[in-house]
Amino acid sequence: MAQRNMSPNKCPMPSLAPDYRNKVFEEVATGYTYEMAVEEARRCLNCKMRPCVAKCPVRIDIPEFIEKLANEDIEGAFEVINRSSSLPAVCGRVCPQENQCESACTRGVKGEPVGIGRLERFVADWHREHAKEPPKAPASNGHKVAVIGAGPAGLTCAGDLARMGYKVTVYEALHLAGGVLSYGIPEFRLPKAIVNQEVDNLRAMGVDIETDMVIGKVLTVDELFEMGNEAVFIGSGAGLPRFMGIPGESLKGVFSANEFLTRINLMKAYKEGSKTPIRRGKKVAVVGGGNVAMDAARCAKRLGADEVTIVYRRSMNELPARAEEVEHAKEEGIIFRTLTNPVEVLGYNNPDDPRDPRNGEVIGMKCVEMELGEPDASGRRRPIVKEGSEFTLDIDTMIMALGTSPNPLIRSTTPGLEADRRGCIVTQGEDGLTSREGVYAGGDAVTGAATVILAMGAGKSAAQAIDEYIKGKE
Figure: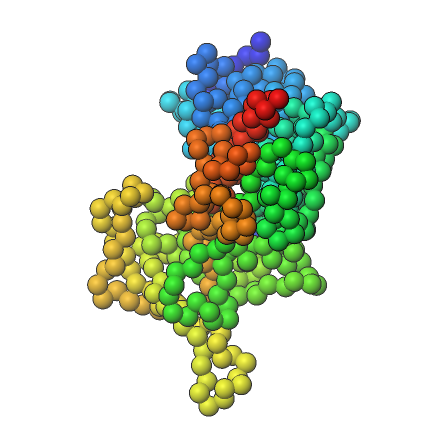
């Protein structure tokens, strides 16, 4: 047994210097060295109660994988993780461990919790760099399942079903698999080579992934059943952006974060000579306070903006973004203007020359200051407009990062599929069963925009339920 490391503090994560990284799209956190990972693993007490496992949405046996890492059995550690997670290198980078597994860590009672996410990343990266053979496809059980959407929920469901012997085909609307991992999360947080490798591993296990397949247009859910699939999992995400409904939102220079990030991440608009360029504003405002807002702001800075401001209607204490992402944004020069809310987008107008190319361009954003009142339904204090506080921010680009909702295409072409008032598919319990027999759903299509790991957890639960459903029919 390895000797315990009783340091109260995590081993710091090495990262690129802020004044360098805010100009490039290289990965910010460079990862633990072998020695760092082993020493951090030895901080784990291998608790009998295993509170961290209960807080993991995909139920990774965290103490077991860390114990193997502490004893320098890296491949053994990967095998433990791989039993539960189809995307370990992704989770180690973007999962909000501070609110999940690490929040329950016993070491966090009198110090910092064990860096579980950092260790998962190290193990997954080590395996990717040292593995000699791709994973093998299990023996077929003779059954077929269709999965809609190649994002975290769909890929997890597909991977778990493939391990059970199912022939799985994933139908992805875009030209590249990965979902939000490919189009939403920037390269500097999640290198696309990592995503591509995880997808390749699923293909090696026998999962077919068909891209440019818009379910509801090219095929319907009913037609997927007619093709011999015995169950369908809907993991189509939530890609429909929300706007505020304020005057001026149609001006040139106003983007949804969804479009802005998709152009940058999926279409590589940050590269010189890109066939799908993106506006490179000099004074950019990003409205919102979540991880997507941080991603959009940090991308805008890397595109050459002189000034990027996060505009958020609550205080810093209520920011929903991960603390690490907020800290990185601050280090990179992002300005935070909290307790502020836009009420109008202002545009340039030359009445003497209607053909002036500057007409309709964003030139400012009218805002009001806010103060916090009593908690609302979300449990956060409700922002209230401060009387007489109106002012104008000088900007040339505005990015709305206010959340997303599911696209209505699938539910509108699937008779009997129940949805709620937000357009989210209604499921019966944690197994993801919908109002249609044999149709399961999970991830953002059910919850609205949430985290990668929660979507993965939903995909995992649905895979187990689908297996039980098909076996029950036999």
